[in-house]
Image (cartoon, rainbow, N blue to C red; front, side, top):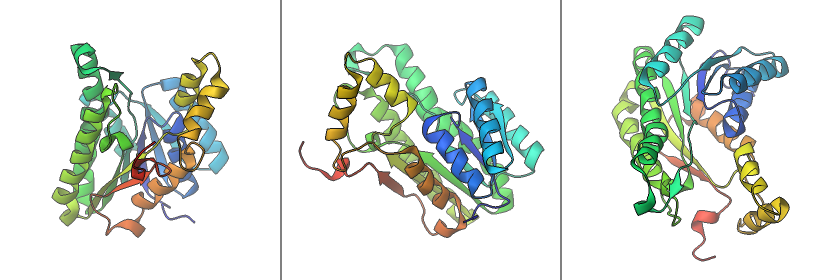
Length: 258
């Protein structure tokens, strides 16, 4: 299926993991894709690899989403290259976990700057072009931390709850203008970040097995499973879906007890 043919999409944090899978899926669906990535080398590798693999227009633009000016430069470059912005996927984020009273002010600000304000910087930068076109889709990659709490993970769920609120507020504000804003909340996903966490254990294979055993489906989510949902939300097939949060967590959040 080529449901994104001829459309231009920005994917933040597109250099690895879920973001890279979304870039790949969008390119396979015919989109021109901008990889907005803080790690310039990772972004460039992703753009080159997927351009070759999919015979698609994929370009990397180094971007710090916590910096509004950096985001605005990236959006201006996207419009300069492709003339339009049809879809934004706010995927970039960081995990800041601590006990509330142990958390430093710097870590609070860092978490909010990336996980919440960064998404807003990107939305604010692309919305004028979408409003002018009378068409567009914004997909916020959130987390099941947006509605469930694990002790010791503060302030990450605070930012993610905020991102869900951002999704819903913008969805209602801009639906009359032809813009669909929705979210995806992945569960534990098999990414390089997850692999690095397992590698910190004395027995990485056992650490992975423990996490997998907690999943009702007995495995971690694959990044391409998130990418498939993102492609749907970015397309015109889901335009009656407004302000929704699609949970892709293998059933963890509907289970009452461990």
